[in-house]
Image (cartoon, rainbow over all chains, first blue to last red; front, side, top):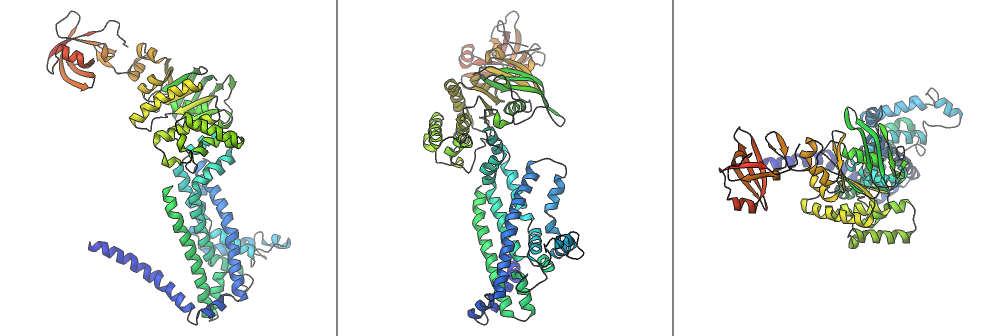
Length: 265
Length: 317
């Protein structure tokens, strides 16, 4: 019996120390000058633009990574080809590589002066680094694996019989995918989307490297928090943090609403 | 539609699933592919359906070469052992699937679905989901789904294998009646000889990728081509070095010419049927299948000495 309580104490205590107290302090600090001040701090034009930019990151990166993740999972689970194991390992790469390294890698490819294809793109009027496209690429890179990782086990579990049944009933490849496979994996996809969204919302390192941190132009919500914090504007930093935290809570809530349904199959 | 399989071979890596198999299935017939697991029967069925591509050989459906056609264009209905129900669709949507794909008018689909649900006795279940059905009901739904598109050929892969014994018996009788009503050329796979005997008109015995024998249930039982078929399609027992049917062994209580002496080890009552286990003088053992009446008439007891004789014209290999 004692060990049972000890286990709970350790688990809970760990979470409180590591997460609970710091997050609570963020909330307290955000509202130290009152709700009005906090509201004003997150509705300045710079703050609004920062949230808008974060929204752009999410709205572009999440759908693209969802489509890619599902295709990738299908290739890994349903097909046999040379390099399948490599593809499977590559999908996990963003988990292993530090976001800062991702940012630097993007600079090497798209850098305007000495990047790999950056100068050529620049000559054709496309600016990737210090601009929204580069930030989107960075966000996409770091949030790439989630959908594929969630969908792969579900695809394995449902097996191929339903798809074969659809084929014998006359359904072509696309019809089978949209009418049979996709509905069967939908909770896996939804869960992956939630995780991708959370990751895209919170991305800091990679985006920070490629953004150039131009306030009001290439500043996402997380960069805005850092910027305000370094300029001793604590109310703005903590208030924006609260907004990010609330968005994260909302995605977590969505995740928990999905979970029981997923268990039911 | 008739099905002709010509010299079909199929390997999976080193495993030979089908080794130069040829087969004729008559139009409108009901055929069982019978054999032990790994014998190649499911592979043969899947080759006919187009779900597996043979390494060599041809498949003709209704006289035309279907070997290179994908399953979508073969006009076959396929029923899987584990139902392969579309879990996110209602029973009605499952049954309507093939018709929806073919973009038939809504009224036609609805009428056809109702007709089929009545045929498989699932009238009241149209709006349920597969998870709300029993195994037997799910399999009947899968059958209705396969029949909805009026396939030229109906293929069933161990259709009753996942069901419990009572439901299995019910569905067997029902499949037989259904075939009498619908008359579609039907091939089903089973490893259960009783099921094959009860349902099929023609049985194909497959073992290790080869066809051992093709024939009517009675042919197979009475004129087995070899020891494998003999052992697979019915009970066997051994007497003086021959494989025989245990009901061809006659038990006598008096010494008789040409009969061998044996001692009763055990009498097992299986209802009407009684299984008598015996040992012969030279350490050999055998068994005989007899009836309760017979045991009572002869007053057989364990430990008793009896004489065994074969019935005239026994089935043996």
